[in-house]
Length: 125
Image (cartoon, rainbow, N blue to C red; front, side, top):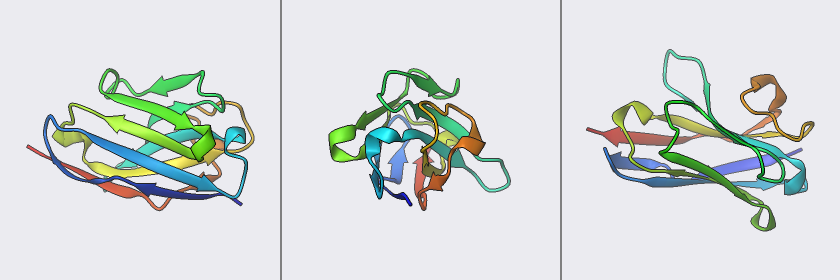
């Protein structure tokens, strides 16, 4: 079983920055492909970004390319999401997810077996 705990969400003005963290426990972190998803009420959960076990492969949604950066610290069992130049449309609940059975899950929702509780990000205009 894998436990994921997100932190770092909050309220920020448009153009500002936030860094989300997701601490994992219960399994060797280096064996987990990781992803960040977000969801707003009434819409499907979308994959914002994903990273492979080693960190060598990443994916970004077109809407966040050039603004968001995913990274992982395998020694700290943590994956990070650095969000810069935030826009009101980035407002959502952000979820960390772990995929234990693949090197890289990308946007494949079904590959992610474990999810965090979510952290709210609100960007004011």
